[in-house]
Length: 301
Picture 1 (tube, one colour):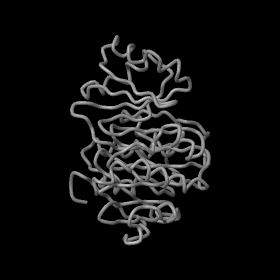
Picture 2 (cartoon, rainbow, N blue to C red):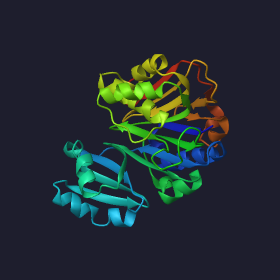
Picture 3 (tube, rainbow, N blue to C red):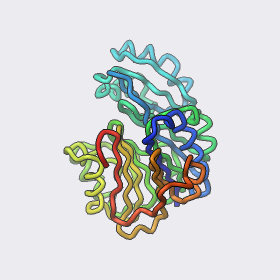
């Protein structure tokens, strides 16, 4: 049992409130998963720039002098430290090489996510503590997703927390359990994907990344997941401009959605949505089994 939330803003006037709205939604879901929590925030990208969010178990040692170390390695970077995480802004052209450079100059840091717009913060602990330590409430953006975890099949670690990100500006949160993740992991490794954990949810994220690398959009990749992934799942997924939801054909995991002229929202339970602006006038529904819901700022749904 885990709690997942998502918010896709249509109204630019709400963008400064995204972090605060998502934080409240996630904290409401605390009793569905007290082990760890995480949030991905999609903000407006700076022209020609990319961001890499990294985590360290020893942030003082790893983050002190990181900017200088990156410059010496040929990476023009600025580093913003947020507790155990840091957001590294670099030239977008250097995004492909930053992981190898980090592995050399700071081998103990772990990449949480990267891309032009996404920042991902996740740690062990209650949602209220996780959002406070990273000052998520102060963050603005266009859309975001969050997760609070109750571990069932793998260890409680920072890397095991959600969201999982396996591609640039892509991430996934999951409530459920996949039965064919070991076989699928082997197939994806043969295709060139790499994995940080044994978590089944990371396999789901990597599957979507691999499918989108073949030219599919998020909606098409989620449709394929209905045939290729076995088990129980509700996924909420983010891309640079998109937001998607899908449940397995049995749909035993709880889910509710709401849509107004200002936003589309998802929660494991309705109580996660009750404080959103204008929720009393929203169209509220339970997403259908084996049905893909997909919104994108750059194209029609």
